[in-house]
Length: 293
Image (tube, rainbow, N blue to C red; front, side, top):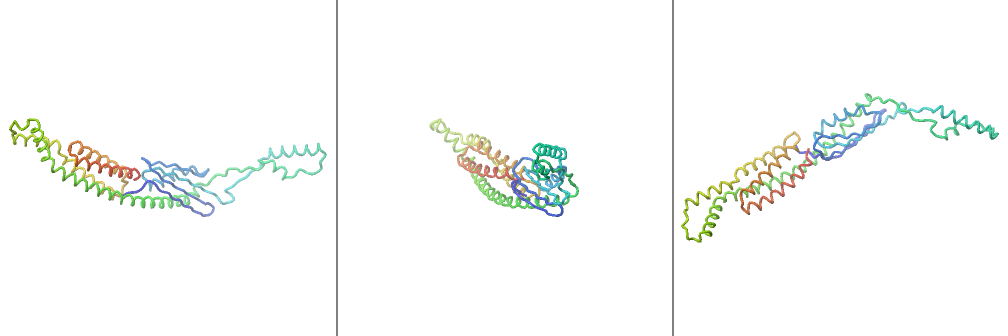
């Protein structure tokens, strides 16, 4: 099955006392690479989250941001900085006495100095939030997978169209290859005539033998058969349930190898021109395959 490696999804789950928000972006990568940003205090859940992601994504970079907010009163804690407050109060009292002021030092005055009341970290109950978080991550991954499949369907249609073009061109190469023995024989005869200026009588049997040897060296039938097999394998891989990106990339390398060999062995301009057009289509396929999971 063709799936794109690029996609985006987000999900939110609100349920007392937690609000969970998940945002996921997926990109191209040779391997599965998960980059996770998680709210402070919940870091111990990182491996569990990555395990949920791995159930959906086999290859690609996944950037996931998870925000968890505890809406309960227990989720926030504050403490007074008593040494600082007491020292500040005493300093203000001394100042009052020195200036002969009678107004008492108020709490508002002490708090105005800042840092008298500070937030304190409350230990997070990771087990309590996990069911809600897991559900939210799974929802985001379902949406991400749906987007990857949709993009993959578009890519598959493009692959099928380009494979059809390559297949048509391969048939044209096959037809041209069938003419190679006769072309080699005529080329050999013309060369001998040019060298001997028609003075030496040509042994037609010997010419036929030499032409057969040269034609055998130029024979590209095996490469054509293998290229046709690669096309069948490419289409088959597109329909598999397993990730297809790496096998398709390997097949494209084999495609290029076969067509390069055809071009070097045939020596026929008509075949060379077709191969140039084929390699243009293969390059477009290669660019697209880089985005397949």
